[in-house]
Image (spheres, helix red, strand yellow):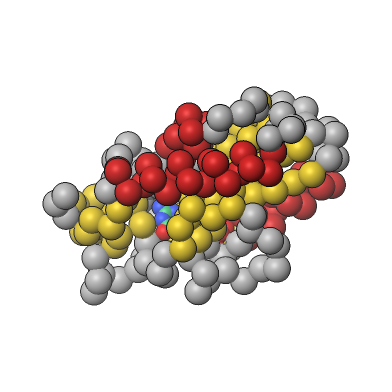
Amino acid sequence: MDSIRVHDKNFVPYLTDAEIQEIVKETALRIYEDYKDEVPVFIGVLNGVIMFFSDLLKYYPGECEIAFIQMSSYVGTESTGIVYQKMELTKEVKDRHIILVEDIVDTGNTVESLFKYFKETQRPKSVKLASFLLKPEIYQKDFKLDYIGKEIPNKFVLGYGLDYDELGRNLPNLYQLEDGQINH
Ligand code: 5GP
Ligand code: MG
Ligand code: MG
């Protein structure tokens, strides 16, 4: 894997496609252990989750349904702290077991908004969260993060669905912002 340049910044290789697939497979099986006797609804939080969502479903061996919602808080490589809901939920999930699926949990602002939205307006039977990545040094909330693929250091990552100003989502591998580059 080579380093790449996206917009004005350099990114170095961090996880290969093969390493990612192992993480996702293991995460899917952990979820299945808890939902064997249910038909959960996986709710993908767009856009960053696309790759993780699709791979997670491929490795999930049980029955399930899917829906999408769109949230946004990032501009460039920095969180604005304000979370917007950009798209309505695509399915009714009242009285259903739902699993919110995120690409990455950073400050936890998005997760907090999601939990609040679902509990107050959708009345599901249960809500859990699965995220491909977590930056534990930054996470500030008390919400239980049920299924985490991998904990990573506090560096901006790109690829496998995650963008830098909308570029890089289609990269099958994951990259890290190169050291020494200003993080904004
Ligand atoms: P939070 O609300 O937890 O601070 O951030 C959640 C969202 O910010 C993620 O779902 C993701 O879209 C974006 N985000 C957080 N960290 C990164 C990162 O390192 N790289 C990219 N590309 N997006 C990130
Ligand atoms: Mg996200
Ligand atoms: Mg983004």
